[in-house]
Structure formats: C-alpha cells, structure tokens
Length: 115
Image (cartoon, rainbow, N blue to C red; front, side, top):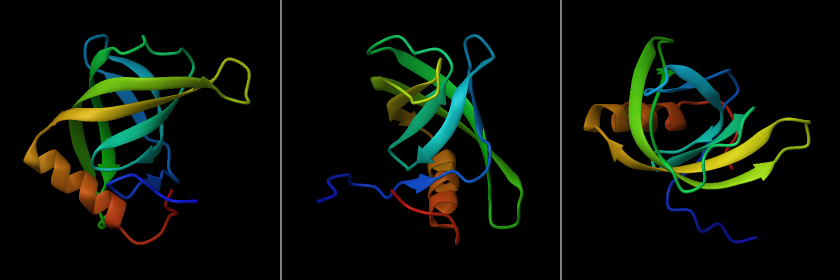
C-alpha cells in the first residue's frame, strides 16, 4: 500500500480530549494526529464540511502538557464499529508556530505507532 500523506501520523496511546472552542464541549478524542490534521472518535458526527476551532493538550517529552489550539476543516465522517461512535477526519487550516512545534514534538516523541 502506498502512503500519500505528506505528514507522519501517530496513534494516540493516551486519552486526548478535543474541545470545540465555541461550545466548550468535548467533541471527541484523538485517534491519530499529525502536524496537518487528525482523526477523532466522536459520539456525535460533526457537521459535514464545517469549520471548527479546537483546543486540546499534548504532553511533551518531559510529560508537561502543551495546550494546542487549531482551526480545522471537517473532511469526512464514517460510522465506527461501536454503536453510536463515529470516526471523523479533519485537516488543520490555522495553527500558530508554537502549536505546530508542540504537535511536531509529540509526533516525533519516541514510542507509539505510526499510521
């Protein structure tokens, strides 16, 4: 199988809740993350083709939480095998340089598996 993604994606082995900044509600949990996008497990499917402002925290190599805020575009949703659960894919459309550095560090941190 040929990989066409431009950025390496890493599976989240820890629980990383993602908050919708507009509603302050958890929209889902990160399944995998790259510097250009993420896949979430959601209990409600996001609106098709919608734009979101998300907030979440990733741990650096010292275990310190690094807050991340991104603008994201919803690309797709698919039903998961668990009843009432949905996979959702997003691409990032707005990321500060500091947040991008923190996400790169998380993806490159030793351990975990890559997609």
